[in-house]
Length: 259
Ligand code: MN
Image (tube, rainbow, N blue to C red; front, side, top):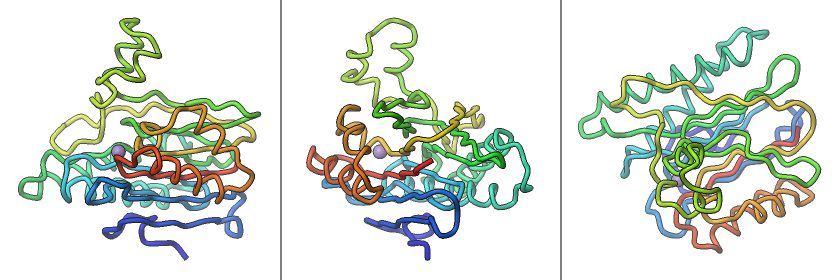
């Protein structure tokens, strides 16, 4: 039983789903929450055995919702259609290209929607059980291992570019207005899809995919502490509750997987 909010097929406000342990070799859970300020939830997610996705729609009104739901639905279809022993890195490349093409078609085909777009972060299990994470945009993937939290892919935003160029420090990047200026996303009226950043995860740990409604409200130390709570459901509930408590200024989505 998959909650509709989790496959992005219809408009939704808040949703929760948990635990596919009976259908795969991973335990996972997911939540999405509209937050305390926004009028709609433009985030979409998917959580199924071997495939976990968060997308954060851009463009306001229904555009963002359509863009993120389109990207998630397309990503699921690409993975479902892939041959069983396909190279997961190649599948990810195809997935991002086709998700962008679908968002582009949807946006250019709808009056007033050509500016719609979405972030997309995907974790995909390969045939050997390793996980490949791909991302375009500023939705995040974190790995918690031995009590230490590591961000697996960089944010595609202007503050991150300034940081990489040595113009600002990591501390400055955290409060820099450039963190809200995306440098890359799957945008309908952009011709080039862009290449996703890809990171490989081997071995055990707890994986978190989230929209920026989580990490813009909470410091990494707080995310690490709550993500480390004993059960996946406790961790998911605590992370969303803490983001809401801190202001809930954006939609909040978390997908958590025990590897
Ligand atoms: Mn957001």
